[in-house]
Figure 1 (cartoon, one colour):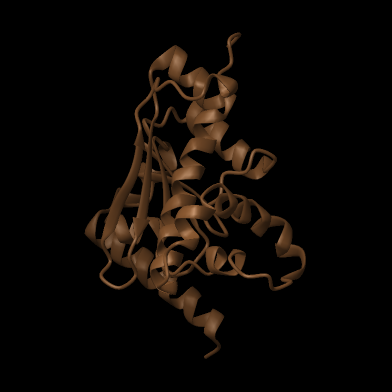
Figure 2: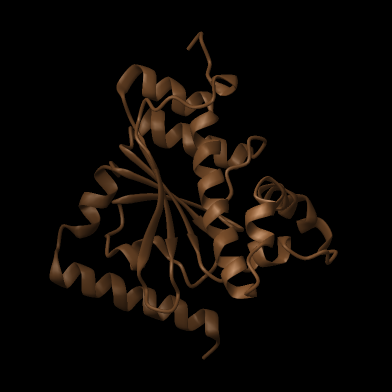
Length: 210
């Protein structure tokens, strides 16, 4: 059996098991989608949002990219964000990185990665903002892990700067934004940053005509 065929077989077994346990399981999923959370995570295959939070399909709206970035020119991310906030009315947005992130590690080198250089440049900017703190850490693993935490913090701030978030804060006092980091070694999520709704950020980024 080929590897992709095994996936299809496992899917049938999973669907059958769900239906046996709860005959209305898929009917509920078809009828409505009302997640409370938007998850912006890394594409890393070891960090599946539902699995590590113990949630079911329908509970978390998910966007994933390399190194869980919030880039102000990324129309994919912004489209997901707008839909989650304005249509799904999520109450919380989670930016979740993970220790040992390959994207952050690559951005801390000077290797030419081809087209991905353009994406990693955004992470290099985070390094530049925090260069003094990061470069003062002698242990490479600790240095990488601190950069991963700082990257999550900066992406949370990038969310707060968007007009989508500021409009929702002004009109509906939601969503709260959370910065988390997942540890592959023990499966535990660490909170590194929180921004409650309606928090004032640098006035340079605050819109006055929303």
